[in-house]
Image (cartoon, rainbow, N blue to C red):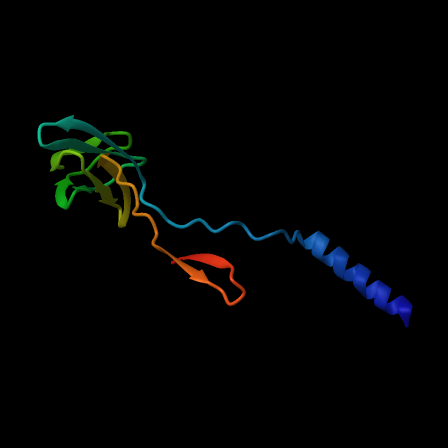
Length: 141
């Protein structure tokens, strides 16, 4: 009996090898055919923020969005840059995250740009407790 089990195992290995069974191809999530870039420049009362969108193939239309504003552009050739510029009000010693994006060919892509001062997160509050054996333990929640 051991002979038949070895033959079966060998035949399975040979069949799989001859059929070209390989690891599954990685699955790529569909994405918008566009390259996004954002830039900012300080101006009085805030920042001038620009989102640049460059389609990687010709598209019938493209819509850019920046800080809640949307602008539609007509057909755009591959490599042609479309841009949208807005002034975002930011108080002195403050900061803001600005969202920019592009929608085209049934897909969308977005990115975030921080302008202004980066706020430090508040320190976590801690509580010191005394255990029954006298040890002091500090809890942070």
